[in-house]
Image 1 (cartoon, rainbow, N blue to C red):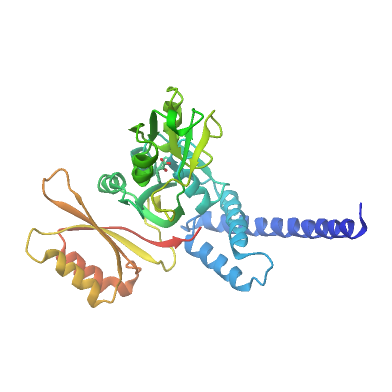
Image 2: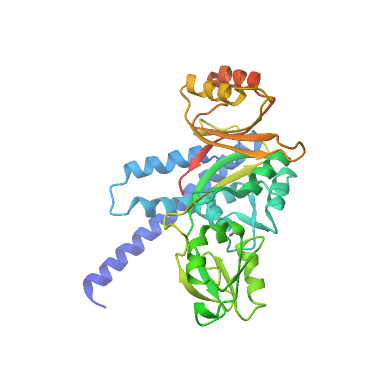
Length: 357
Ligand SMILES: O=C(O)C(=O)Cc1ccccc1
């Protein structure tokens, strides 16, 4: 072996053994924290603390390690720490390989126990009934707007938002055929089909579009058709005998989905970035305007306002509102009191941290 190369390798081996020692030292400390957490009422998952920790390291980082790599490495270190402290189960819209799965791993790392669910309702149920500690659900998309089904499930299940995370979505068409012309049926989640509307119309107009419960569930169905194909994550076809026929087929390249991380209990952690509210209003002129005035007078920025039909009462609506403020702190009490006065019903879905994966 050439001399300088051998020397460098030796130095890297040295650094690795130091890293190993330090990682174990960190793991031991983290286990001690876990024992304290288990005695008190501290959450195992503390997105705010994890976010601050990484931001601080990014500030200290002088390179050449890029911050993006640092973030990914720390995501896994913290994922391992959490797993050492306590088993942490995460329900997601399965099977493995869906966008929900990858959004979970991007935010929470790969050391947690990801439990696939057959549909979105089962994710809400798993969290609401304590079958899993956490759940992850798609909530809105930058091209396609709110995921109505998730919003409707918030109306039915008592769960709380602990964090939000944004995931870039790149769609890939995986098929059984050699070329695009022979594709006869395309299976996928309605969100995926909607995000690729233009491409589908222009490129595979002959194909029948078949909505499925998830992108992952589409694979099995596609395999039953000689001209079957699925739209999903770039890795989705790799386990099955599907080949990637086209990549990055979403109507806009910059396509993002906002996912919410759910828990049963409201998160009693440190200062949070955002609050989500679910309210119904009296059927009176100016009812919504009065609510909006409360935010503008308190200089609170609203980032989302969307209504969903109440279903059990026709032509009545529930409003989903997100604001860039932590409304769980004592200082926000006057705002909450005013909101309560103006609403028929008011539920705080959570005050939480924005997780940048
Ligand atoms: O079916 C999936 O893979 C999901 O996780 C739902 C979804 C579909 C398309 C974009 C984002 C989430």
